[in-house]
Image (tube, rainbow over all chains, first blue to last red):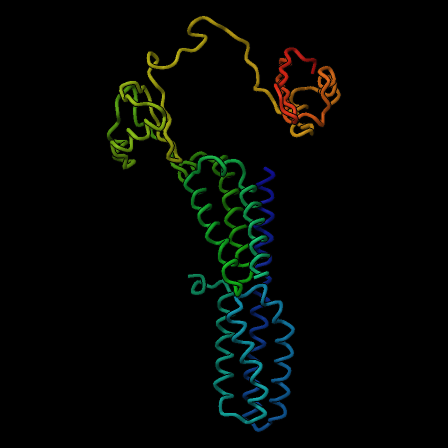
Length: 125
Length: 234
């Protein structure tokens, strides 16, 4: 009986942790996607300083959550996101033509990460 | 490499915990679901060790989840016999009254070679001596020989003896095993008295066993012939 109670408690703990992980990753990924959209809108409207501020804010936010994500998610994807996010500020500053493709790539990686952590039918199978 | 070492230690402790959580059933012969869990756990545990990009939690979560499912499932099979039959199957009688049931053999995909080999595993080399045989749910084989071919028991030849529990290990490597002493209904003082009666200190004892009839076996760390005491007051 003790084992069954322990097993039940462990399962409930795992469930709570999974829900927390899923909600956290979903929320942060949506913020990253919103940031990428804002950066592109500001850049295309000519507000380079605004785009740079947004990019800087994105990088700061990422540095805060990166460590936490490393415990929950495969590091391969996180390394890719890290690489892209670290470049965005400089691409905006240098008015680079690669900015749009990098922002698109970041959005795709973020969506992929979110899909992997959200228990939908397609992501489970 | 240090990271791999620490992960190996974490996963090792986790697997030990998981096996302990599943309980003694796991350490004996395996039911089909238990075999599946054992194989899965061993494969999953290697993933975070081999690849440092995979977080440890990705290995811990499925191992704990599988073990907990298994424990809860075994609890359910205990309460619901129909569920147990669904998950583990039921034992099949393969030899009844000395006659081999070929229908059951076909059902189990048991060849004649498998049958004879299983018999030999039970020290039966002559199939004509088998009265009854069952294939258990974990695939093991249980055999009952015909009475005339079986070993005679004491009751068969009119000898009746008192039943008793086997001897308990009460001292190991100089230390008393209190649960075993309590099981015998004795006390640590009584054990010390028995030892002092033969001039042996507790620290000098390597093995001491005792049964409910007071028969003690004492082997010293220094070697030499063991002491065998009958009727000790424990």
